[in-house]
Length: 281
Image (cartoon, rainbow, N blue to C red):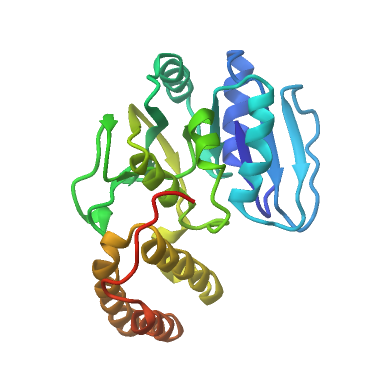
């Protein structure tokens, strides 16, 4: 299990604190090692961590992909078959741990990812279908096994290490944003399965409130989004280009002028139907 922190201490992290509370009542020996990767500018070494916790400070803040790539080979050496990835603001519960552990034990060879259903308040944010570029406005996946067209966010996700090794690890073309889109897309490119559990957890997703995002942060998200559709999921490229135009117009009406101009600039530069879809990295 790996938890990535950024500008937040372990004592402030909803993920770390909810996990520590769960471990205080039940041992869960299946959780052999819990890595805390701190990408904050300042080191904040936690005090009184249980032996299975380890803390690593990475001041360069290379993002999620680099942090995950540092951890998963260590998990393989420790004899683990799965890696659970978590953000700092996810609230875990006993039902999640119990069902996730059970699902890993009973997973088939084709199961590459195991995901919970995740809510931000009353809105399901993961998993979503990838057949639409506005997935939260459509029917959402329920529990079951999926062989195409589903994306699950990184937090709370269990990744089969055999699958990850076959992918060559996490794709560092996506240091932070759209890493989960690439990983889910890779599952179906390799004819494997994404399993959704009948269990829910809560997670705070900052991109649900775009007005709170800085322009610099929006630029990075848009760059990753564009790279994903231009290089990998190119079947959705024409729809993505159309969505950029609509988004840019909406941002103008919202008086988010800098974001709007950047979006419309990207819309102008994105190809419509050109490009060759990648099948690996």
